[in-house]
Length: 251
Image 1 (cartoon, rainbow, N blue to C red):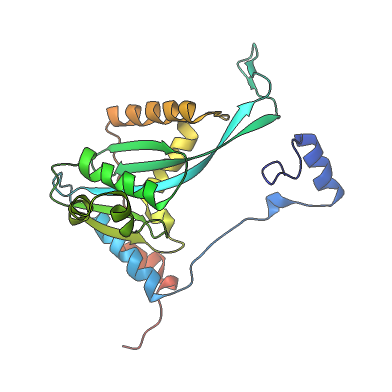
Image 2: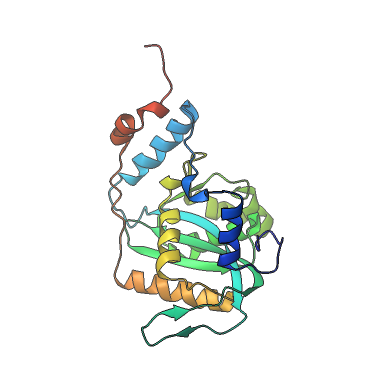
């Protein structure tokens, strides 16, 4: 209700009474999204799964990229921790705008970086891609970049941001692999974003500077532990466990 700006604030008790009055039980409804069987979906899925089976090669790293919007929320009244160690946070808060969090992760290298930007545009994506190629892996022979197939993820954006020589040099070092529609679970960067939300972000983050400090502390700690991602789900597994997604064909 607050996010949609129907009301400036609302308590948990008001929500409970409203649900009871209207006999609503949202906890008994679960959202789900299962893609329909299609050659397009399984083709993209198997391409991603095959990439994850490649052996580790520092000269040809596999890198995953994903982004997520983050609501910036300030506290109207300061939180406190009682004598039992329980943190008390007031339900009222102030909306301080939004930011976009970009997750870059190399699953087998145990390396990730998280950047905070004001928005998610094709130009922001181009800047992140340029950073991956020129700053993170300047000596790599080829970089395989796994990402969602969003409209903002277009090669032409590099030519909008950089001189043609630089744009071409960046693209020449990249192999793009796109997850299928409704298949974002195939992107390790999305999984890392979930881990970041659970482990590295407090309930309220009021500014981009605070958000940047939180995400930097989180990924530096994980990098120090060299936390790798051991992806186990293979193409052969998909053909068995997800066989209902494969289209029928005439042999």
